[in-house]
Every structure is written in structure tokens, then in C-alpha cells.
Amino acid sequence: MRTVYYCDMCGRSFDNYQECLKHEKDDHIKPRSYAEIESFFDSEARYPIYIYLTMTDGAVVEYNITSIIHGREEDPTEKNSPENEAQNMVHN
Picture (cartoon, rainbow, N blue to C red):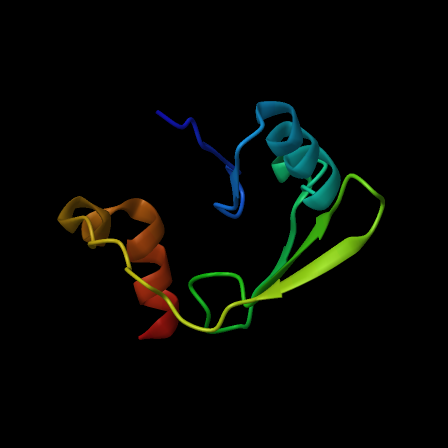
């Protein structure tokens, strides 16, 4: 029987657990914090059009939206919320 270890980031397989851990630590740079995301919106965009993440090595990486894989279903109670009523008045 053979034991195989897989990198949690990329799926690469390893026969040795320590090599797998070293690969995950050294070969994949992660965001320093997901709480420190800078996001930018287009005036008509529901979602950010791009975000900046600061990585653990100090690099700042830009990610751009290319498509929405699955939008959330609209909550019917939101249509009548005070915020949406105010927005509808401004846009109508």
C-alpha cells in the first residue's frame, strides 16, 4: 500500500509528507490577510471589478473579475427594504 500526500493549494502529489508541507510553505505565497482586501467598483457594478491583496512576501497582487460564475438569488424581501425603496426613488 502506498500513501500519497496532496498539496492543498495545487493538488501536486508527494510520497513524503514533509516534502509536501515544505512545498505548501515555500512554493505558494498566500495573502497576508483576507481582511485587508482593497476593492474597486465600477459605477454600475454589483461586484468589485478588481481587488488588491497584500501577500505574505509583501507583494501586492491585483485580481480582475472576468465573469460571475453563479450570482446569488435575489431575496424578495430586499425589494421592499428601506434602502432599496430609497434607491428606486433616486433612479426613477
